[in-house]
Image (tube, rainbow, N blue to C red):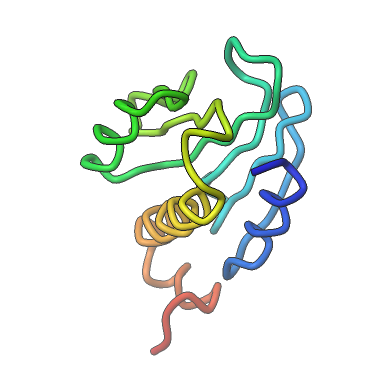
Length: 120
């Protein structure tokens, strides 16, 4: 998945915002908290996609060729996809959607309601 497709997909998720920071990285947030990044962090000379994972997904993904613990964020269970062959675009989208949900769930109920993530 390239950066244009990454940005287009992230923009479809509910209550997201985008900011370009950290040397041109495309940083996607929900409720002000980051859930996915497209950047040049790491040893490869191309845009790489990083996202938050559940514990089990983190362990499984880090065993795949072309997926590594994300620089600076690995301790929080983030991975970086460094190869287009590592995951299909649909798989990346699914993991990004899960990352969005993981981060959104950490927001207060009040924030979730204000952002339209929950009702009531």
